[in-house]
Image 1 (spheres, rainbow, N blue to C red):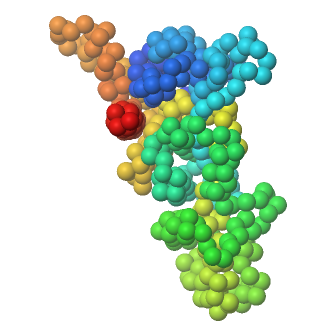
Image 2 (cartoon, rainbow, N blue to C red):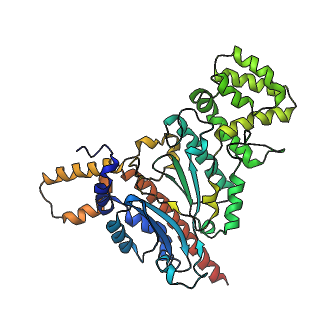
Image 3 (cartoon, rainbow, N blue to C red):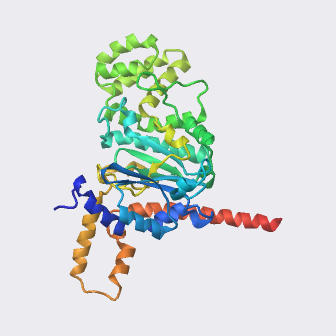
Length: 417
């Protein structure tokens, strides 16, 4: 059997090997323990596991890394979700007095799913993605990351590929983890621009003056719009498609543009004619109309309910996607434009890499080092998972440095008084 080609039927055989030898438990615990500064922070965290045949187990909690490791290796979850830090250990939630078991803290999280763009992408639909439409995720990450950093001052933002068709963001600053439900809702609303369900034709309405956040977001969209929407998606290739665009602009120019579009040959040419025609209108009305079209086709579409709830669960980094077999890996934001979801390793591929290493080692002379110790420390480093764990470690190093800086500042302030 070729292990490198993923077959979902092989998942029960691959997961035990993944959790025993490849899952980065040390880094994972280091993240969710947050330096052990707050007592019981990790112990009061909820984990949920989806097991084979869609058996769903909620309110799991663990005292330490070793306990988490043993349980995951015993249960071999198909999917891992991370929830809130509660007032009591989630595993004891049934024995706690009614009403006292409360979600207290959680990272501020964002979930962007490609299916929410089905009305504006032509290459794929539903759960399918390709390199053309993946640009939408790149745009979303650029817009949201800038706003979270500059507009809200959050320093620790972990972007993670879901393993199939979307991305998640975990904002891990202490101030973000302590946000109330109302405050999370306010952040999510601030970042939401595309409004309305399937029945709503025009989903973006700009008001005057344009908010600085939206202005900056438009600049990001403009960098990608021609190549992505006009060339890649060819959003005005034929009448059926350009009618969707014309439905978003003022009625006064639609008739003229219908004629102009028939004479033009490409979406790029038609877009130029649209902008020229809009410029002949009242200045702001025309200028805003083209921006509204661009935003409707490219602006991030958030699942705001995921961000609002403190007790909402979100898929964990390094969880395996059962359908694709791909690992849910951290994204190196410095190389965002180069990120390729199809290059993310599958569980079968990294297990086959490990298998090849083992075969090679069996033919080598044994050294002085205990092979079990050697294996424990280096297994993931021998596979394609290594660069993604490194991105995670760099994120954790920054979290640690920031925490040490805050502790030093607090001790200095104490001395002054």
